[in-house]
Image (cartoon, rainbow, N blue to C red; front, side, top):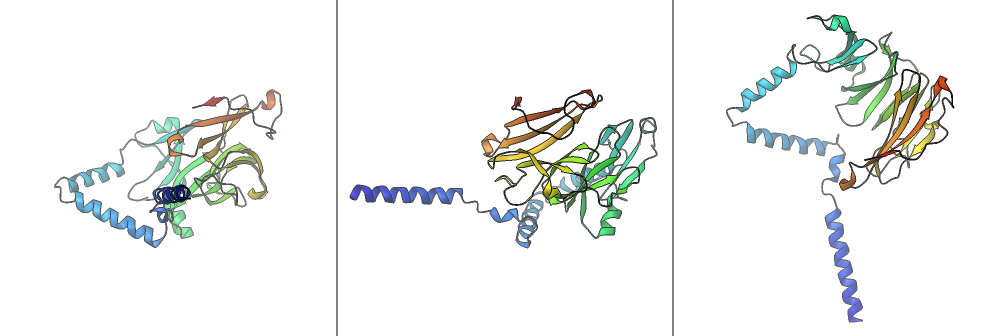
Length: 294
């Protein structure tokens, strides 16, 4: 009886210590927009600034960093699609930024004639939103439609909205994904592969998408059919489609395992589509076994 009592007490103590060690005292910080979280961040920012500000180099370095960040001759961050150069640009006149483009030959000039596609400052003012431009996902190779990723205040979760590049406006009744941690990839002009928060059971323990679904234009995203599903213990599952000049493309889902020690590990599943060259085009009936692991 004495041995059993000691064993029970030991197990109780072990469980108690384990529960204390695994309890995250900063769990409440995941509510990034709460007043308590914002006050905590403001206090840490103030503490950091007060530690560095007395250094005589602080003001100089701060001024130099800001000047370089908005300098009109800074190295641009551009992407090339179909003979056109795309760039997201921020300056004093456009603190939220403008998404713009020009052709390759004009880009070689000292002062390219940029065409503004989306003015985020004007959009934020019009919609009374704290929009931050996060990026785009465009349909290759014609680049006629893109999904614009907009974040409220710069947080991880973002809203995705379909954008018509030729008309330079959002598509009325087009693809729209509510605020969430989302991954998306165009299958064709009327279908996308979507990984997002679909409700109960659709997320991993890390709070990211667990399923990839094929979403058809004109239907509710909540009716999209699951074409790939990861485990709850995975970190995230994402779709990627690689369009080839001859019409081939492949779709892939990736998932890292849940523990911090194994976050960098992932596996990739592939489903080929031979398109006009033969085979089954369109709806992915099944996904093959992983062909790459890292």
